[in-house]
Image 1 (cartoon, rainbow, N blue to C red):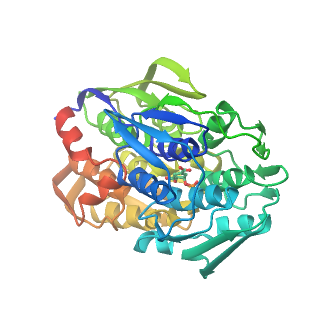
Image 2: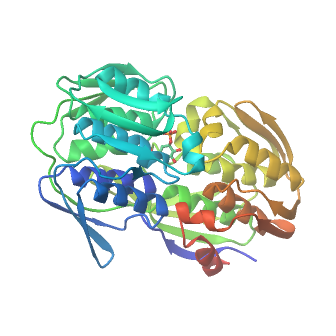
Amino acid sequence: MAICGKLKFPGDKSISHRALMLAALADGTSEITNLSTGVDVETTKKCLENCGITFINVGTSVKIEGGSLQSPVDELDCGNSGTTARLLMGLLAGQKTAAKFIGDGSLSERPMKRVIDPLEKMGATINSIENHLPLSLSIENLTGIRYELPVASAQVKSAILLAGLGADTPTTVIEPIPTRNHTENMLSKLGAEINTHENTITVYPLINRLNPFKTTIPGDPSTAAFFAAAAAMISQSDLMLEGISTNPTRSGFYTALKQMGGNVEILNQLSEQGESRGDICIVSNPLNGINIAKDMVPGLIDELPILAILASQAEGVTEVTGAKELRFKECDRIHAICMNLGKMGANITELEDGFVIEGPTKLRGGYVRTFNDHRIAMAFTIAGLVADGDVTLDNQHCVDISFPQFYEWLKIVR
Ligand code: S3P
């Protein structure tokens, strides 16, 4: 079996969430093509609908009528989506729109203090039990702040910047390590006053509504990474991933794959509305272990589960450190990776902030606990392709969160 062919992926999940939210703030109708097909982005759409925003599906595009955000009658159900919850808290705070936020079991366990603290400093009132969902948000006046992020998080940065649009003075966020910059890119293209100097971003109160826009979302590099990894480690493979986001704050996985000896080439690069995309070609090649340290982590945070599978097939040691944030994702991903990969026979050691893997090992199939986490399910399905014996997941359906077509597309390239 080799992994061969061409795939053109649905839109990036992070950019899709932001495009929907910013279209809601625009003065007129925006049109978004190639939106993410995942449940998380549908969740953001439903929440915005509950705040009075109208969406019309036209073929593969969605049209959005910008308008003032109304306080929802019901709670905003953010489902499994941390991006929906955290960014919407900031967006609604900036529009002085009170709301109650709820989420599923996983989201209700994820830390919200990181968003609550800065929004409260800006003047929002937030009630929660021990800084988790469910929580309620209300706002009278919002003042800009200067805020040093205690953790490198694009979600927290974005929440503060979106709130800052409605503050009465400028808002500055300082990042410890640069994280994905889609919010800044889009805001600056749509007419907001925002500037970035090194790790410091300042947004100014929005005087006019944002400009309506037409955009095609670049393919999701995080989803594409599962297919890229399969092609990299299965001999005789040759795969082209078309139109994938090559934003440098998102391409850490592809850089790491090259460092591992992977044969990765990016062709046909172009840029639209501040976001770059290109065709990523991967040809299988023997891989070696590498070190991933703290500074590299935000650029490949969502790709670490699949990178662990690659490391188990690479010659030598791969060490990932400075990635404690992985414990606060849809599940504790450090635990999920180490437990499942260990059971499959990999030589893996769990660290508080990462893991060490010595490869290569012939993996054994078996029963995998996904913890209902889409990226754990996809990573271990790919592990199954290089294992002796079948891999059985306790929940296959959780892939719907980011990529419902995952199994179907895997069949196409096998
Ligand atoms: C995201 C940012 C990352 C990432 C998540 C999506 C975003 O989370 O893990 O899947 O869209 O801003 P953090 O910013 O909390 O690290």
